[in-house]
Length: 545
Image 1 (tube, one colour):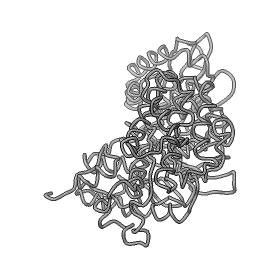
Image 2 (cartoon, one colour):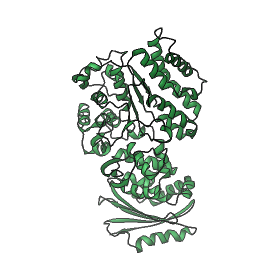
Image 3 (cartoon, helix red, strand yellow):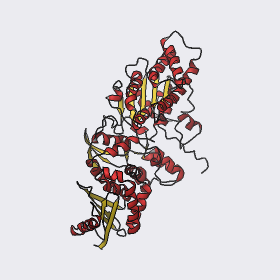
Image 4 (cartoon, helix red, strand yellow):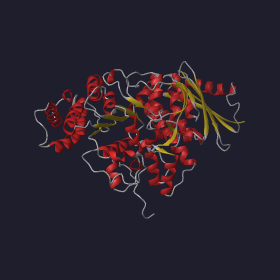
């Protein structure tokens, strides 16, 4: 359609988006909330791809005293409020740490320097020839600037870099600056991922804490990330932020697209917000508001295909670690969740899983990261959760496959053979998968159950999946109840031991003798699988009910 605006895929800079006349969903009333709430330091925790960077650059453009941003905000909601007069009225310090990661301390330090050089250079140009060189703030600013430009300088000397910049900016303008830090937790998560956090923990504490706790030069600070902070460990000095997670009403309308915004966007590009789209992308609840992930919606609007766009963004390392360490009670609850059910869980959002691993902080991590959504709070520590949509369900399948050390496509192909009753190919593929991940199988008593769990995620909407995970030798009993009469039901029983020829028959007989098929109708494929480490055999029978 002629005159249709460009979709801002990959563009998360507000100025660039507005100057290119790209499609923009007006979130500028966030500025009004920011001013009215008057938090000295606020943290907004949101899942990846929910518009954090775009909103932060929008705040930067609105406030920055060194810019003229009136044209960028023309026609937007904030300009119809009493706060329109505050445009370009304050100095702004802006950092994005979304690319600050590395396999070593040296690599992370290099990325941190690069991310800070741009803002320091921006102010160095503004200050040129105008600063009183006798002032302490001036001296510290240029000292830190030189350290940032020196490739060989250590991270140790950068712990006051944020504080130093706020001081000199306040001295120069006589107005306390707004400090904006996008994706503050990315470097911290990288330090956990590559096992050097113990070396950098005190640095992060000083780096953030010195600038944002008791800093007389700071006006207001807003930081964003996926994880909320804990008051222990990393942030022992930084315990004063107001934290707004996905359960809080504050800032809720500004990250993600609500139902009306999503419907209007899709309509603009010739698409409809129908039930199929809702099943794929809907289901998030943020501060009680039904929300869609903007990254997925924008990509769907451009391509017109219901694909897993969120899954193609960078994976959350901490979620993988958490799932690897999850206990039996978690997986029992998770089985119900992948079947599309809701589950009552005990949860804490006060502690980062990285700092204090527990089942409570695991559920909190999954909620904050967008892998689960809270449908109802029972009390302060108990809530009902569900997996939001089909796209997140696919992400779980990928994560479970990675945890098990197997390929997702291998799982899908193997399972397709099972449902088509191509048992010879099924067993061949199953054996190859078992061989490829034997070390995992040996380490986890419920490994075979986990393997099937990963496949069963794709059956949402076609099958009801139930299982009976038992103690002992990793035995598990899985029932796949077809929701359509044209599809076959499947019952799988696992056994483990040295005499696999006998055990496969025992497993099949157990299904038949115990009448596990009661309640099913139509054809039932009964499968007994016996394992002895890398060896496995299968017996099966199709019966009619």
